[in-house]
Length: 554
Image (tube, rainbow, N blue to C red; front, side):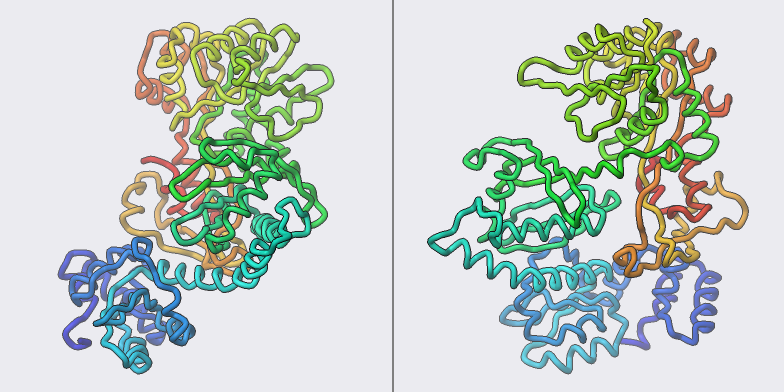
């Protein structure tokens, strides 16, 4: 197979790379004393994606490409073979039938690894597949997670089967399991914990820096007891499994008090449980800690100093809008002014701020609460979310009568907030008179400082934004280390765009101009779209270009 197939020649022949790029990659390989394979170098140089490389090899070798997330892996088979050998070969045995042992391998040109596999698998012939290296790594991680949870699972099963089992017992094994899940999640700085029943097992995942990662795989037999005990913690009805429920509970973990917002929802195999981790210390940030550039910070502070008007913070769910609003209120709160917030639900307590919660069940929604708030003589009002025309009209009315109003909208960019207000039924002239500015934001993961190194992004990604780049730009990424749990990222930071409504923009809004015309005019007056902020942070080594392109539409 070796003499017949030369990867570099195939890539050149298919037009994936040029002959010059191949020669450069071969020179790098020679400089490394051939410690790196050619495919690895071509990938690191950004010339081709890992999946494209795998698909080309699949076509040339005749090995099917396999999506490991789409197959049901039989983990019991792996017990019969040395795991370390499989890890070194970057291969996973995922199935065995009457005719073959089915193996997915990351590098089908690693003949030494394939020979080692054939030396230990002699009972049946091997059928090879090509899979992504990262997917194979994930399978091994899941196997380790399963093994870790085994001993605790045995205790829980024994307890459930005993005649004197009481689910309310605070010292029970099921309560110890819940505590272990919460501890592990907090240790990894998770914002949310997802407990999801499947057909054969229960997946426990954490959302860390906006990305879900599996931390436990539990036996399906313990699920009912686990779900019931968590619902008791949140004062939910354990007998109700057909409807969604919301609750809240507190627990001391590692000497620190944490609140958990609980949500359950019925799914095909049982109730999906999500717990939001609420840590008071993490929400009360100063404006300077949000991660805004100096230019954007000055613009935002200018909006906050407006005597009246409405300021919107926009972005998708989970983009940090509430954190930005809390930081703004934390910055401008004072004994001399009265601030009232309207939230659903109230997640964090703010000093010197009167906080009110909506209750749709009794007909006390955002618009109803806002009308009563206006009779409380506030100076500043924060509305958790503007959901309908009634709330928007009332909020705009408040802003025109001398109040400074903050709220959120779900839009993709700042100019779209104006279009959204029109769609909700507000006349253009009222928008022009009331709107002070719009902040649109996303959260991107920060590169881990402990393993940061220079990195060449994919050529296709560079081509998308080359008009915004300086000559010979340098980008970075995290290589992965124990400090960042081998993800290459640690923490998140905001990227944003701020549209300040000056007289020219106000006139265009009143004339009913569309968002493209408004954006074009704003850019002429100094408005910088969010992509600029993201690229600047990537060039500074704060985040990766891939992360910016993941969250910003070009």
